[in-house]
Image (cartoon, rainbow, N blue to C red):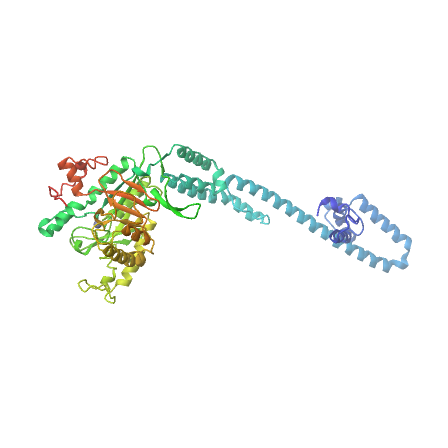
Length: 566
Ligand SMILES: [Zn+2]
């Protein structure tokens, strides 16, 4: 109700029922037709008439208006004219009139107090809106009390500032890993942060970097691979202890210290880890078909995309005690790490293979990873995966139980643990791949043999432990199911693997890079960075790895030489 309307009470101002109601409501309030201000000031007069004594000099003495005084005078005159016989009636009417005026004045006072509260709330709301605009504050209830609003306007800037810090540092981290669009989107998702000086500065910075990015030529992405890393070189390379197995370790394995030296070199040379799924991925086309579509990897000038993979992440039974990790577990921090048995028999947890070493390296150098990418890990099936004997051939209750194997009576729990590690690896940025079930040469074996092997892997690893989501195969021995020509579905082996869900196929190739983007698949060559390859560079001048590093600076002096051939 506006002040203006109060002065026009008693006069119909509209024809609708609601307006009529309002008018009658106002008429009830102001039945004597006096102005609201007069009603307020006449309050003092009522008290006076009721014999109320106020202290001399009090401001209340001045509250009677001329009009009220006139009304009182007129009333006194009317009283004198009507004579004493009406005294009882008149005093009763006066009491009634006083009550009416009293009620009227109380209602007026309440209305004015409500108005005052509304004005105060409005001012507080306005101030809060202003503070909110400046600091990105949240919603403010217009009805909050003065105490509440004072408290909130004091704490709100601190709360919102820390929220802003979180958003900006998260955006910085995303930008460090080349996800500039994600960083910009994150800041813009909070308009207050986007409008803050820090937010605007970050947005401008990311846009500037974006403008200078260079699209990677996906056909020139190098892919390097490793096997389980040697932790204890004296042990693994001990030919007296391991016989021909020690030669194998010397040939195809890389040591922890060599791997760490390589990471330093890759990083300082500007390499950035990407996923196979970043290079290309199956995308729905306008006609509804799915096509393997080139990825758009944008990196700053001088940065080069690289894929890392690791084969046989199974911690095979034969490797037990030879100076390698035993298994991958989910650590106390929820991240994958390794269990390793020291020569004393003491079990320890930590950086004993590629996964936790790479994780720590990327943590220290976030810009070594494109959008959190790490490595691609490949598993056979016959010994289970990740160090857990999960295969059905270990299950004494299975028709497939292999009596030559030590039964795993804990197989269900081990499968569940393996599933948890798989999830932790995916969360940490790893891609997972098949490496066949029985480490078979898919070039040489028959279609029927390959089909049987691939089915066993699909059942025991993909469906049992990986939620059936695997779409990468890293061929054992690099033995591909086709030559360098593009795959065709007329190729029965390729067609069968494709039907099982594989879309990424990696062989081994000594070229710096080899990428083939098919209509419905991606194929890439990989390079082994192991003892034999390094020795060939060092001793035979092959220089196959010189684009990556000087092998003599990496090669461990604990390796027996010459490193025997495959
Ligand atoms: Zn292998």
